[in-house]
Amino acid sequence: MNLNDMAQQGAPGAAEDPAAGTSGGKTPATAEQQAQFDMLLGRARTIMGESAEEWKAAMQIDPARAAVKMGTQTLRFLAQQSEKAGQPVDPMVLLHAGIQLVKDIAGIANDTGLLPDSQIEPFLQQVMQESMAEYMRMDAEEGLMPPPEHLQQRQRAGAGRQPKAPGSQGMALAHKARQEGMQ
Image (cartoon, rainbow, N blue to C red; front, side, top):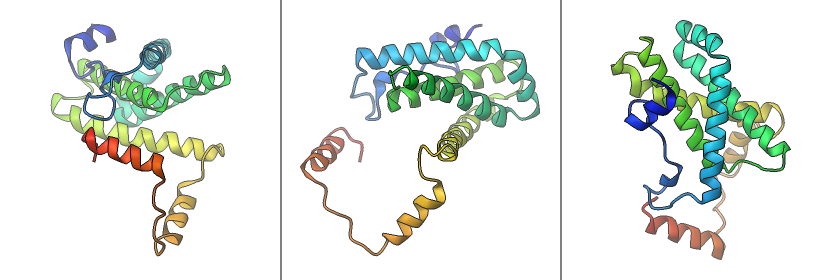
């Protein structure tokens, strides 16, 4: 069974629909987002397929760590290449592609006996959390964002201050989020 078959059948590797957005399916993806998602996921699957022996061997040692390392490095590499080409990846597309790639990896690990059915959900949660943290750590290491310690210091320094009232655009976004059930 290939990755596309798993996505079609709704197995642990079921396709994540970027049209679902973050508001429970109320915000459909644009045609551009869908095209980015399809291209990004297709390229990630190709790269993962080309190095399948390497990451399958790593998964036999520590499935979660291997999934975090290979998935994060692959998606980050593709996102950086797109940005260098002047076509940055929409952050929501990157997130949805990452979710789908993790599901694909979980499906393969399950099919090969490395991940029992009972461990699929905890595996997905662990790998997604660690992947996002790893992505942010790598960005901080390269100076693309402040390191987590700096953010924590800024939060502590601002703990006694009242937050600024959101401007009209912020209020409109907050209102829209409430309408869509995000809050």
